[in-house]
Length: 587
Image 1 (cartoon, one colour):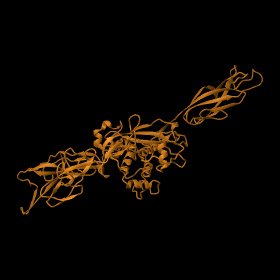
Image 2 (cartoon, one colour):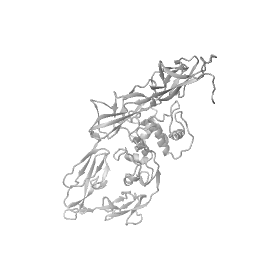
Image 3 (cartoon, one colour):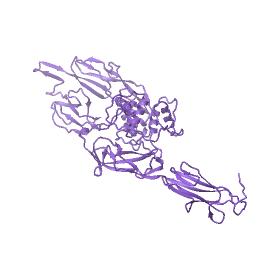
Image 4 (cartoon, one colour):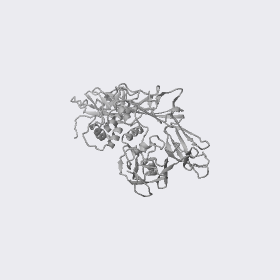
């Protein structure tokens, strides 16, 4: 609609004090300013003689009152408009029509800093420029003691912090600390020092060291022991012992060969001191026992014989037995073919099942050969429940938000129907909205007394464990030994129950850290234990080109297998619920 007026339309200009402005650039937290409007009827700017009305097109960012006082409420942009009312004196020379003037206002975030005066890494304070603690094998370390300088009083802004070591082994290391802001007003601030590096010295920790040693078991010579960290993977050494009239026949954790057998080049994870005993068999020459033992100058002789388990060209021997001794048939001792499980053992190669696992028989007067018989396994499926970021990373050592945690559990839901529960800060169009509202409706998650969920806030270890227990509908525990988990805290029963179920563990100092933020790697470790999931490392190594991999998740990362299990959907088989998964396909 075109408005026709009989009076001249003046030019309207906006002033801050005596300065004409068309744009104001301010910082969140700046003091309010007073604006005034002036009109020009051809004789220069002058104050209007009629009423001026002030409005803002974005009052959540910049507000303006009836007197032109402007307040900067949030980061962003706004247009302030001054509307000068018509002034009618009846004289065209002194009258004027309604007119408007505008000023653009840009509000930048306020720069703040992290105060590291009382910084702690892994619970340790700085001493002479470094942080020092004994080896614990952890690369993702907790950060504490930091505060924010420059935050406006009463603003809901906190700092999240995570630190990663470049290497967990002993020596001089570098910890990289990442700081991020959370809270309702977090977007109004900008961290100047969002990254920080610190020198860390990791010292030797005898309590975390174990030894793999070798025993000649009747032979001669010596071999070097291997001193490694608990949880390390060790490689069995080649034999250098000798024994007259005997041939070396592998290693065993028991002198009599009734323990676990290994050969040179085998690997295993070691978490306690292990002694491997050389196993010997007679070379048939004079002096060997030929598999017999004698006592009393030959008055008593007892021959001993092997039970040998076969699968194609692989053979495992199960100690030596005397005739008449009861032998219990073993379970699977080989890597099952893809899609197969052990049906039992046959006395003939390619024969039918003669013995099932756990059957017994009397040892005859000769060695017994048992051949593996395989059957088709029932195929099951695991869906992926985490995904990476657009830049190809997965952030194993990053903290996880409450929205991300909810999405993980939602991806694991078998039944995604049911009533939904809403929160004031979870808009329906957000990527996480359906997951949050569905889980809330099922009672898996809850919000805060003010009706919010705080989807972007990092989740603590206590909060996540509570969410996991609710998801599994597991009973709360009654006993918890962590010294930093008091019985009167709201999360006590959940942490006690998860500990009793074997889903969680604490830190080397015996604490649990309920208020520490949990990392994405730690989350997958908890969920996989809860869901009885474990990656098939052998299958993954053979199909790496088909897997979803990430640039920041190396094979050496402590949670590599756990993260890959979570990120790659797959079909699998297993002999029973106590057996490991055997992957057969990726999807």
